Length: 159
Image (tube, rainbow, N blue to C red):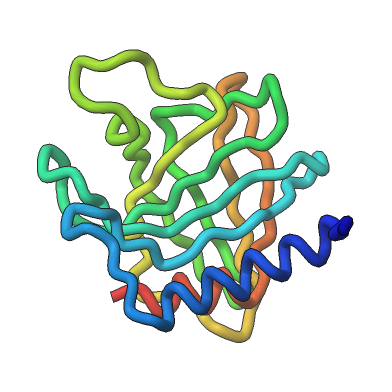
């Protein structure tokens, strides 16, 4: 019997929902994840965006926004701020926390990933306007990503 890729993804999602609904719980030390999404930048490159609570006690507690490039050769800047703006004039700057992606003294940070402190989202963005991210790249340039309603609502819902 052959199952299409679409059917197998749907079956996986149903199984995941059942496992979660039946009371499976993650280990106590696991990261609390608000969500993860696939987004596309202005150049058409795919990125993974995730929101999670920093689990490592070696770093300040709080929520983080992480971007992971799905295209080879894309390098994020690990020092500059992430700028967000909405269509209502709101502007937010999130501190770069890319150094938190590796334990202290460990190997170099992945070039295609960057992490930012979501504490800078104060006040929270409006739920009625799209949100635009301006991600700093390693070559000194930036790339833009427009976030849809589900991501904006998740950012609004951060504790």
